[in-house]
Length: 218
Picture 1 (cartoon, rainbow, N blue to C red):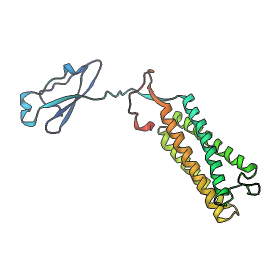
Picture 2 (cartoon, helix red, strand yellow):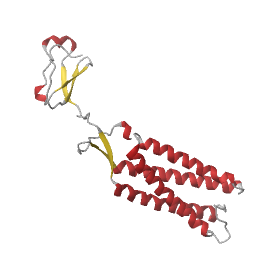
Picture 3 (cartoon, rainbow, N blue to C red):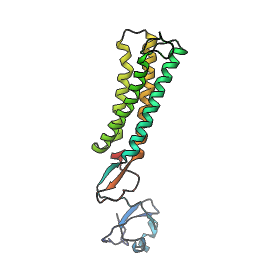
Picture 4 (tube, helix red, strand yellow):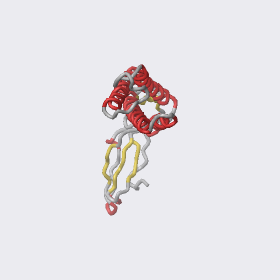
């Protein structure tokens, strides 16, 4: 509640100002500049004087997210390359060191047959699909990164459970499930980080909105 010595002020261009009183009470006034904020009167000496500090002027104007599509999809392409390399490295590690088959049979050496390339290609396509999902969610949902986390998390769980519906040996099932889990974590974290970097909020008038971003866009 405003002290008696602080009259109500009204200006055409409001500026958020907080008055911090010695007893911990904070009172707010709206002024066009800090010079026009009144000081605390003598009647407030027993409860402590007010200290004037400027708050970060967050606007109440509506904002909307905009995406730098070039930056987002460049990051998605880099994520696809990383996912493909993780898949190839995982297959080589399993067949060459642990003597465990991953999808393709081991008959043609550590590189396997054409299924190795399909597995790496599938990992790259999964990264591109995740980038597209993030792009759509940013433009259409109130909390895109939260929804994106759920989508990637559930897709990763499906990828981990898929090997167990086959007739492969247990070692092959667990190894493939672990590799799919690593791919899901890598794709989800890299695409989410790229999406946050490529997204900014603008007011409906076209001006950028000051950080931090509102919670619904995180």
